[in-house]
Length: 240
Image (cartoon, rainbow, N blue to C red; front, top):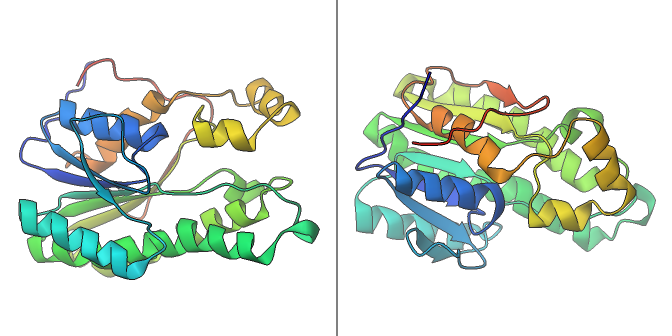
């Protein structure tokens, strides 16, 4: 069975879309005929996507960026909140500033962009939001307390938002993509940690997550307040 997604005329905002999973998704949205707008602190390498420089932990900057998108395109159809940082430090040695920064980007950044984008979706009476969590949210992982805590909090946040906006035909779902080979993953998982993931659930590629993300953004996904989880591998879609 082959699946094709059509994003013609649709606008999808991807935070953290300059690299990794976000970059792969943004490219796929464009391939499907849509407009991908990347919010990031660094520019994407793909010239086919739109780019707005913004630090998602800055609420005022986020609202300004979303306002620019709506002013230019007149609509937003999907939001994928993927911006995150993943520092490593033990709980007893963690720097307070590093803890705060992780929560500001990973948790507050999602809250701010949802506050800015979701009213537009509610006005349109249509739209989809996808929030990222992690398997670490349920299991924890040595040296990843801040990251795991932020991802656990996002599950509760997304499910609550989903319940609040369900009556407006706006869907909010969560995805746990598993271990994906990105620059951030490689930096945070050196040596024995990388071997641990490779020997257990395996390490996927950013493109492996694109199909499930496009599904959650599409009108084929009727569910809301749900979570997709990668246990070992997503089937990759070779064409869109």
